[in-house]
Length: 282
Image (tube, rainbow, N blue to C red):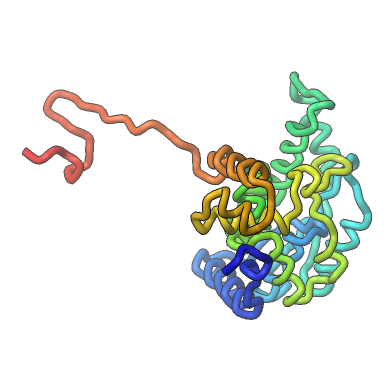
């Protein structure tokens, strides 16, 4: 099949069925009472919240709306409440401003101009709030990351990348939009530009330097073992752009894996602590 938007089309009804079954099955087997999810008013969080409500019932999903003064956007909060009302999800609002100010005041090397470091703190504070509620309520944290952003590392390590389940992680951004339309996420949310809201004016496509429609085709090609030249030719995009995406995918591998350690073997006189089946044959 040519590398066009058609390769990214999904059977939305089947995808909804499989994801809601996964959420319901995992929550039940874990013995949890439900899930907690960060509601930003954006596409991914709205879709993950809606799927959780369809799987468990809205009453077993808690949406946390976590604004802070620097990036406060009343439209996003309005959209978060809109999704919550449509899918019967109770919400709590937490103003992160005093928590963040305490961090800034406590950090000796705090630099207000370092927006990346400061933005990552915001994402990790959101994660702390989600896990606190999950601990208190015997729930799981439902992640909102999609495949496009995970593959290129466009997330905060131990921030929005931290969760117990990640129902959207095998869907590219354009596929999340297809699914969102199918399950009834409001159109104004489905079509709005993606924005992590870690600093004012931050838009995902501007920061990535590529549209999700193009990015998803490139990632699809890479995932299906096409060479950069094949992808560039089939998708009609510059080879340099494909290679840039490939470099970013490889460079961010550490964000997708657990921490690495060193495997050490200790020997003492008369004792070997390696597992027996790993010992050399005598």
